[in-house]
Image 1: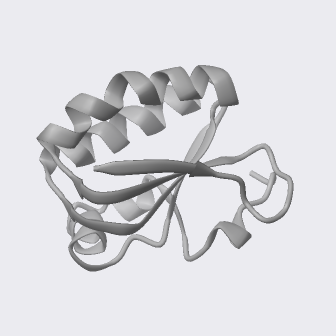
Image 2 (image 1 turned 90 degrees about the vertical axis):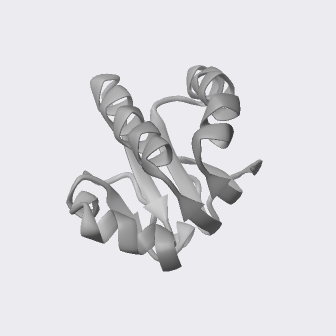
Length: 113
């Protein structure tokens, strides 16, 4: 799992974390602590770019669910950008597209809601 951070095109309170590869048990073990550190540094408005994530397992889904609750407890939110393929199918099959703000691009990030 590779990660990178980026800022959306327009200035917002959101920060973007891009992920590449597989969001599985192995990746989650390595992401959990650095992710919490980044949230402390950048704030509770996180958008995760999933456009280059080709696989997610139950551990990855669990991380996203815990993360959205953690951020909302801090008066923030989590948006998922461009999930596709198997990742989008899993989010739809589990009805989690209702829990997350799902966007096509980072351009759609704004400070409303």
